[in-house]
Each structure stands twice: as structure tokens, then as C-alpha cells.
Image 1 (spheres, rainbow, N blue to C red):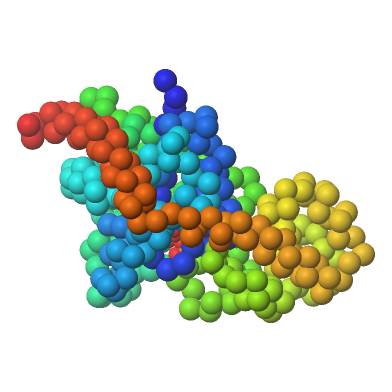
Image 2: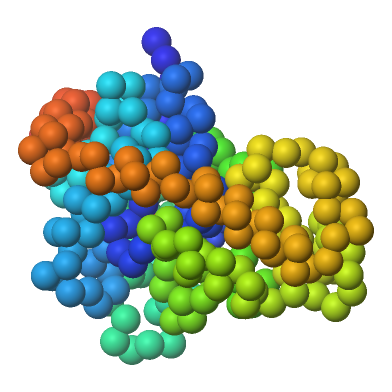
Length: 324
Ligand code: ATP
Ligand code: LTN
């Protein structure tokens, strides 16, 4: 039997090339080798204030993004988290095993909610829902960006704790964090990761940005002092831009450095913009190909398949804990 992958993204904001290079690209690369479950995590999307009028649309848009990025519904299970109620049910059981201190240490919570009296409890327990997502499918591998590593460690700890206290139940998942591209930085501040929730829209290249916008954002991207174009750690802005170029052009790191030897920043940025635009062009055509009816059918089929596996795991959990 093939090993299993589980991963997901939130239907909030606009997906950017950081999400693509850190996660989606690897989902596609791994889909032949693994039985893959790719989820649209809409329950996670309500942990911060959101507009109910747009959430449903964003959820369907994200499914289209998965498909246009190359996730193949004939090979993978694509589904919406809330269509499988077992995610919320297992979250409750796991949250009874999770320690307050463990969640207080989560850096994403510290960044997004700590110190804010009005931050929702859901934002605090968000990583437990993520653990439930993963553990329901007896997942072997979880392709994610660097920012999710800590959440995956918690997932492993919870699985080990449950197995120890109630008997062997969950597989212990491994993270898959790409060696290059796991943390694409903002074009405006190379100390911050490229983020959907960044107020400065010039910091991110969104997958649906048009050619003009992409070119402008790259032209405005901050650079470091000096003139060399290389992967030097002490020049994080250029390193970040060159990393994006490397991943989208398919060249090796050495080939990239050789390619730009002697070029100025202006020339480099021009070629980078062209590479990004050309890379996104077919994606932006494909995204228009999925009508509502075919999308609905894919998601319905995905939810049925996912549920058949998730319900088995949850039944086992209920039996082991004495609930049923
Ligand atoms: P953001 O911080 O942009 O709001 P997120 O992590 O909350 O993003 P998701 O859409 O749920 O958003 O993330 C999908 C995937 O993209 C995750 O695996 C995450 O680790 C990855 N990812 C997010 N930002 C980056 C980045 N700047 N570089 C590489 N991978 C990233
Ligand atoms: N927390 C992740 C999204 C997410 C996820 C998951 C990723 C929710 N459940 C399960 C991998 C596996 C994020 O904010 N990027």
C-alpha cells in the first residue's frame, strides 16, 4: 500500500508564491508516489475575524488553485475540512490531552494573538485542529513550509501521548520541508516571511497577480548594498530573490550564480520578473477551466473518500477512550 500524505492551506487572503514554493509545488511533486489528501482548511479560517460573505467563495477558489497548480483529482483526494465532521470531533479529544503550556509556546499564536485580550480561544487551539487533520488519515508525510514545523512537532507529541496512554492508534507523521523554498521572504522586508496577511501588498507576489503588477513589485523589491548576485546569507534580500528565480527557472544554485555573474540589479530584476510572469501564465489560464459543477463533483467525491478513512480512525479513538 502507498504511504499517505496530508496537507492543507487556509482559504483566507490570496495565495502567494511562498505558499506555492513552500507547499503546493511539493504536493504536486509527491502525488504520484503517495496516496495524497489535500484539504481546504475552512475551519482554521475562522480563527481570526473574517467576512462570512467571502469565506465560501474563497473556499471554492482555493480548490481551483489546487487544481490549477497541478494537484490531480484522479490521483489525490481533494476536500473541504468541514465536509468531514470527524476533524472537529477528534480535535475535542486531542485538546483534552494538550497542555496549556504547549500551546502557549506556539510561535504562530505568539505572533497572531498573544497579548490581545480579545484573541479567540480557537486561535489558541488552532494547532490541535491541525493535529486532528493529520492524525485522522494515519499520515506518513506532511509537506509544509518552515513556519508549520512547530505545529507538526506538537502533532507528533500528541500522537505519541495518545498511543502511550490508550494503546497504539495513530501513525507518527514526518514533516517534509523542502531544502530550498521553505521560507520565502517578503519582497519589502527580507526579515519577514512572505505572508497573506501582510498589510503591505508589495511584499508578496500573488498567484493571480497580472504581469504588470508582478513586474512593478519586483522592481520595487528591496535589495542589499553591494552588487553581486549570489546566495550570501549576509545579503538576505538578494538571496531571497535569487531563490525565487532558482525554483521557478529550474536551474541549480550554481547555474543561477553563473548566469547572473556581472549583471546589475536592474537586469537581474527584469529577468526575474519575466520568469515569474511566464511561470504563472499557464496557471492563470488553467484556473478558469473548472466550472462550478465539476468542482462540486471533485469535492464531493473527495469528502466521501476522506470520510471513510477519518471515521474509522475516530471510531477507534472513541473505543480506546471509552466513549463508545
Ligand atoms: P500566511 O502566513 O501567508 O497567512 P499561512 O501559513 O497562514 O500563510 P496557508 O495558506 O495555510 O497560510 O499555508 C499553506 C502552506 O504555505 C503552509 O504549508 C505554509 O507553511 C506555507 N507557507 C506559507 N508562507 C510561506 C512562505 N513565505 N514560504 C514558504 N512556505 C510558506
Ligand atoms: N496550519 C497550516 C494549515 C493547515 C495544515 C493542516 C497544513 C491546517 N491543517 C494539516 C498541513 C497539515 C497553515 O496555517 N499554513
